[in-house]
Image (cartoon, rainbow, N blue to C red; front, side):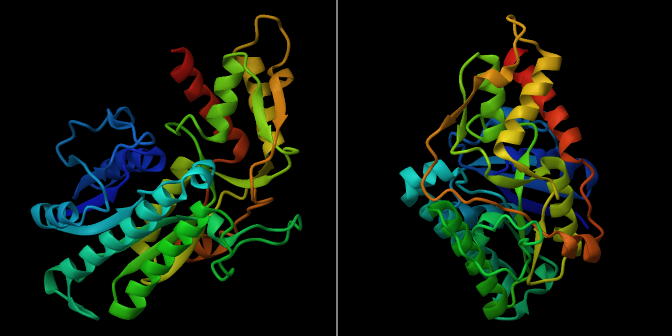
Length: 341
C-alpha cells in the first residue's frame, strides 16, 4: 500500500542523504520534507530529487503546530522520520535557547500531532493508522563522555549524562518520545548515532572545516590537544541503519548506530592532510599538516564517544559498509569537487 512519510529536516546533512536513498529503495513511499531552511538546511542538497513525482518540499518550522497539523491532514501522513534539530555544539553554547525551542518543543509538537492524528486515545490506534511509526533521530552525545578505556562503550542501557546545551536538548527530546510510547502506546523508535561524516555536511563541522582551511592555505584549527576521540560513521551507513530500525526495529526500543571507527581529532586532521597531499598538492610542495594549529578548547568538551552497535547488528543485521579510511577518501574527493569545482 502506498504511504506518505513525513521527514523533518530533510535539507540538512543526514536527511538530504537519506531522502534520495529512501525514494530510490521504496517505490511505494512518497515523502513530504518539512524543513525550516535555517543556515544548516540547503535546498541544493536535494537538487537530485526536487522534481521527483513522489517528493514534496514544505518550508516551515516543526514548532508551528498549525502547519504540522495541516501537513498530517493534507498529505495523510502515515509515518514520521524526525531529523530536524539544531546540532552544532559550539552554537548551543552561544545560543542555547534556540536549541531548547527546536529540539525540545519541536519534537513535542510533532509527536503530539502524530498521536492525535493516528490514535483514538492511549493504546487505541485508529484502524487506518495502526502500522504508523514515529522514528526519532538522536545522538550518542546524550550519554555524556567516556574514559580512555577502549572497553568502555555507550550501549542502549548507558545512563544519560548530557554535558552541553545541545546534548541536553536532545536528551530531553528522547525522553519526550519515550514517554509517548509508555504513556500512550505510540509506536516509536529512537536511534542514537555517532559522529556522521560524508557528502553534504555543513561547512561548520570538523571535517569540512579541515578540508576548506587547508585548500585556502589557512590555519587548520584543532581544539585543545587534539586527542578528543569520536566514533565516526559514514552517512550512507547511518541511512541504512535508520531504514532498518524504522522498518524492523521493535516498538518502543532504542538502537545505537556507530561505525566502530574511533579516531582522535588530530588523527582526522593528519589523515585528511595526507589525502590532500596526494590528490591536490600545495604549490610550495609542503604538507598540509604544517597548517594544523591547536586552539583554545571549547567549554565542556567531551573527551571520548564510542558506540557499541551490537544490538542493531545482532537484532536487525545492520553493519557499516565503510571503514574510516575508505569513507574519508570518498568524503575528501566530494569536498574537493565542491570547493574547487
